[in-house]
Length: 178
Image 1 (tube, one colour):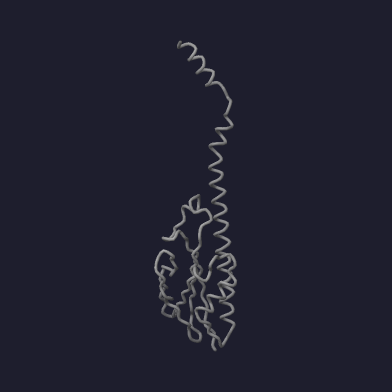
Image 2 (image 1 turned 180 degrees about the vertical axis):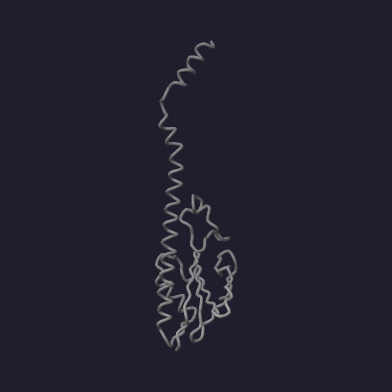
């Protein structure tokens, strides 16, 4: 009784049937994880690049438009018009403008003001239009939903209570004389 069982066990051990299936089962999840992470990274890069570009264009308009001092809502609208791939830009974008004295430099706070859909709405924080020849720092924070929130890179991003991650863009400019 033992001899036929041992012979069958030896045959099973020497058999190479199904070896490609095992390799497939081991490698496919890893490949799908890398693919999902690549798509997520591509979307993050695209959205961040569009936010940076929109900020640069709007700040250029502000610098060159002497005599005008656009307010928070107007700047936000201009950025949202130019940042094409940010969903629900009007609600997810938060701006902060800080006046800085270059002779007596004090760094702005490290924590950027962002929205959080899981919390109550808070009013605009620290948005001051500068006077002539003043150095201004404009920071924008957009909240983005991950493409694959539970897979790969999307699962490992720092998210808020609503499951969104932050894209932050900063720029500095000098307020031109009016």
